[in-house]
Image (cartoon, rainbow, N blue to C red; front, side, top):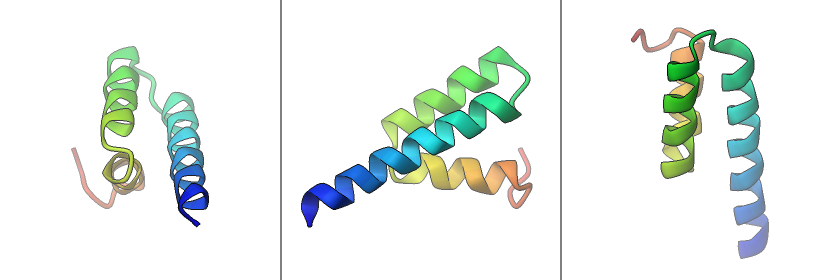
Amino acid sequence: MGRLFYILIILIDVLAIIDVWNRETSMEKRLLWIVIILLLPLLGPVAWYLVSRRIIKL
């Protein structure tokens, strides 16, 4: 069960990184979001989703 949880986290992180790469036009913002996603594997993708869907405006 634990391995499935970690695999799911990795999958969500990879999908979030792919989405960042496709949506962001600025290389600096891309790299910043990728670092955030990698350093905060649970909160990073959630933050990206909220910001990219304009739920939180930055």
